[in-house]
Length: 192
Image 1 (cartoon, rainbow, N blue to C red):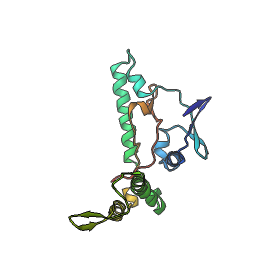
Image 2: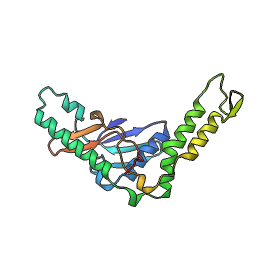
Image 3: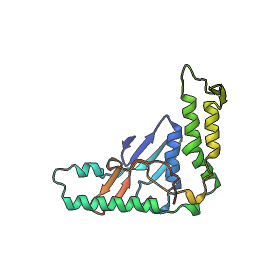
Image 4: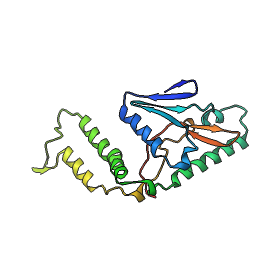
């Protein structure tokens, strides 16, 4: 992340991560856009957001003379904003492609990527396990069985969440009580 003038550039060699963050901005419900910096330019492998010159909630809370009533108000404003985000229904804007994408991102891709990266000298991920003479599915076979059992994501299951909301990822405007998220994750599936 690099601050330059009136914007912040977020770039990474991990294009998948950057794409997930950009999708978060694009799919964000209208209500929550008031609580994020404006994403004003998107390029391959990077994106730009407006710079907000506020302190993080953790910086404010650690000020030696930060009044208790300011701390209470900040906590209430943050709680209200995060609760509103979580309660935001996205069902009207969720389509089949998003549901498929959520399934892939939240379960299948992560699981199979981790299995592919798993190495052990005594385990061949593609060969069946043999236990007491009985042949059982391989590691990859078990993953495929598990993946087949995961219910299909439906629009009613999709909500919006921050994913990493802690004081260091929240800017706070203590004059107007504005809560601004500065670390993003993509939309998360949850039971509504």
